[in-house]
Image 1 (cartoon, one colour):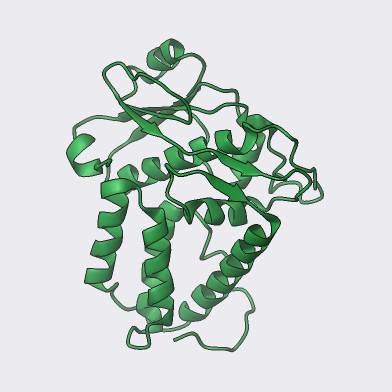
Image 2: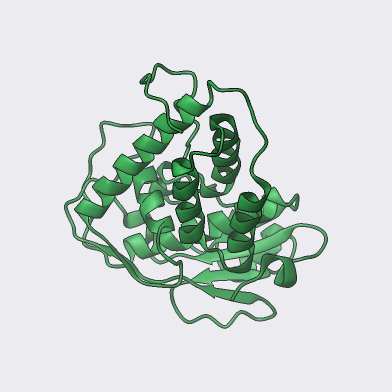
Length: 255
């Protein structure tokens, strides 16, 4: 099991490399062009490749939240659907050798859905992701759905599951916007510690999402504390949970 603290501690930038097969083939509309409703092509590597980039993005966010700079390279060209899925752009593209030169040193972590022998580095396996062709994919709903599964296990993205993820995302944004109107309160320490442990010991994003669901339903936690916690953990999850803050929203209060 990957441990951020034990295996990736050190000084200077942490260099990573994502090996994403055919990730640029996925039909996720770019957020800058909402009129694009292109369908997902029948490329079995497309969604898996995007998932590889997503797992790398999550680990980047975790490490950066601890105050360490991260540099990442992709052994694939720039991916159009990555931006819509909330994935940070790569700092370099090319072969591992070219990425090593561009980043100023060899990657310490490699992300791959296939067998890869990382010379002097850690290889993190990402499970295959598949979907039926012809579905319109909302980038951040897809991100939530994928984060809801252990990164090393296979996952199939159905239209029904994607719709459920989109609905959950909308409800959480609505709740966060409501909590933002309440006085700010400190995040519950024990809760945040459990979430941090889940992320740092194994990139356990499903556990963090379950914790957020429990926090949403907790009647003894003030709305202001829920807002701060959701906003803090979204720095890793990357779901734009605070996007609707300040916009007109329902008067229903989430407690």
